[in-house]
Amino acid sequence: MQRRTFLRTTAATVAGSVLAGQGTRRAFGQAEIADLAFDSTSSLLDAAGDPLTDESLVAVWAEPTATNVDSDDDGDAVDYGDDQQIPLVGVDGSVVGFGAMVANDDADFRFGNEEFLLNVWDEQIGSGTVLWDEGHDQFYSLDRFGSFERYAEDNGYTVEATESLADDLSDADGVVVTSPSDAFSGSERSALAGFVDDGGAVFLHDQSDFRNFDETDNLNALASALGAGFRFNDDQVEDEESNAGVAFVPTTGQFNDAFPFFAERDGLGLDLDPAESYEVEVVSPTDGDTLDVAFVEESNRPERSVRVLGIDTPETAANADAERPEEWEGIADEAPQPPEGESDDGDDSVRDVGELNFYSTSSLVDPSKGALTDESLVAVWAEPTAVNEDADGDGDAYVYGGEPIPLAAIDDDAGVVAFGANLVSDGADLAGPGNEDEFLLNVWDEQIGSGTVLWDEGHDQFEDYRLANFSTFES
Image (cartoon, rainbow, N blue to C red; front, side):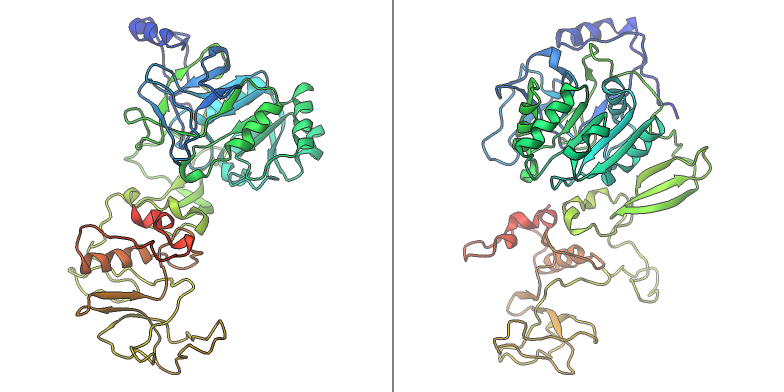
């Protein structure tokens, strides 16, 4: 369906003159796409690694209220001053660089992101085959862009993933490279440069340096090999005023209309009425609380990725930091309802956290290193089907026989709580129910209530068990 029409008319003369002063040119009276949202975006630099000020190379800037920060504290971000516009999209010939993924399935398609990206493809390629590089250990593979892939194919493109990019270039019209964890070899860079020289287009997608997930050096090596006049900054752009709910998702309408990328077109944003209900068919679960669904009552059964609010399902371990309790709008942990797995105890009952996943756990023993059987101390036992073993073969484990195996214990008199596992580390390979964060927070609430908690890192703890690797629970 058509997005809302954003008309720039002569009634906006004052705003237009301000924007022109910032290097942004508007085609007044022409319908444009909605503002863009750049989730976890980097900024761009010039080829020398300095702030990019050449307007002929910039298609989109952040709003004047935006700033850039060195999120990973590595000291390698180039700062943009208060009087400098922050570029988010660079274009040099048939090479385009985006500071963010722009149109992955987590994107909010109420903005103009997918329309903008397809406009860029149309201008740089027109139609044909676009190869999506998956041969360099990318996190952002094609299957994370399912909605945009279908959108592009509905508009005349063939989009294919490849792990042998250099070998497949002869059949391609365009190439997408998202943050490559593995660097491109010299021969691969030369092959891409030859592809561009022969008329092919290359689209490079960076991401912010949050938790150092970016692969800025590898992308910049590609940009250099392709002779682009821009590079990617090792930073994160934030905007406390113009954003999609949080500062690290800045929104912007600062378009350089010297580039024909901003015309409104049919997008992915369905014109849905929040007061109405819509019948959808689940096509596939994506991850956690994200589903691909088909709107069965719409023509051509359009498929969209939707987020389910109000219920929590676990993310995969790779996406553990995507668990965002603040998104569970309107749901209280103490909402009266039957405890999970049990009968209704009445209107005043409180929901249990449900089953817990103890990943790579030990059992607990009593002070004599025998079976811990004091029920007044044990908060959680393993299921009756569980067994424990001396996994390292040192002969120092107490092996439970027919007794219940304790996994968590609380001694109120001593003020000590013990868990057999870490429960909520970001890297835990959790395949179970995923309610450990609620359980652990309940324990903290009962034992402390509020205040300051110190996390000991002074006794050579394993790196994965330092506070930085519990960031989801910490937040």
